[in-house]
Length: 279
Image 1 (tube, rainbow, N blue to C red):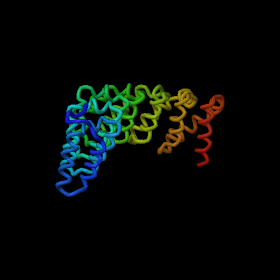
Image 2: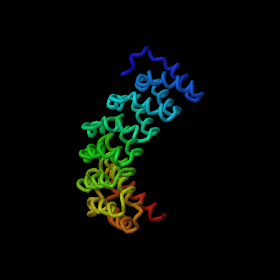
Image 3: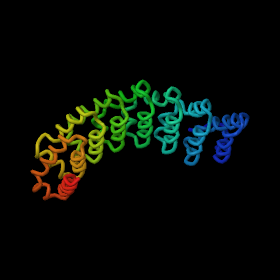
Image 4: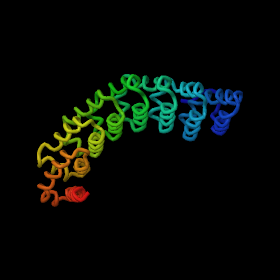
């Protein structure tokens, strides 16, 4: 995990980070010290914050050298409760060409790591900061299991990031997965969040297709509105930036008001319906 060059002294490394703001001699000496201990810092509960500060303070070439100390250790770092933050910082601070090795090391295992509680954070930063040619391989792999990711406790975050920040081809893959099982996903604790995100970020025609899958008949919409998590999707449908679709949903829910009134979650949707009519 760490370097073999002595015991890690976080306080000394903190002083080195401060010296990164000094003259050239001080900066270079600090860089040597930090490179020697960077991997240890990244995996240490206190040191990981110092490692992030170093990436903030260092000059461009030194940032790349520091992050490079994690080459060959990305999978271990991504699943560390401490080092995952350092990987995220490297993705945020370095040009994609210099941080690309992080995405490369997930090759062949991206779908599995997209379900990890810490690694998912790294994936999300990659989607936010890498251009298509640098994130393509990782997303191609992960999207092979998009249906499972939609309802996974951690994987759903990647799907939502693809919808908000991703590329057309991967958003189309997500849409197809949602269309194939829209009502089940919409009623799921995590899947409902994905559906809400899709209704917000999909293009007009894609959003219309998803609405049709969710509102294909009154009975399906009522069952959704009366479910614990589906009610949030029903309320999102009321607030669509699409007057025609929103009016259709309002009409169907109004007709079903008696059924909605009979359940706790249905009454919540009725309240939203009344508020929507007033606003």
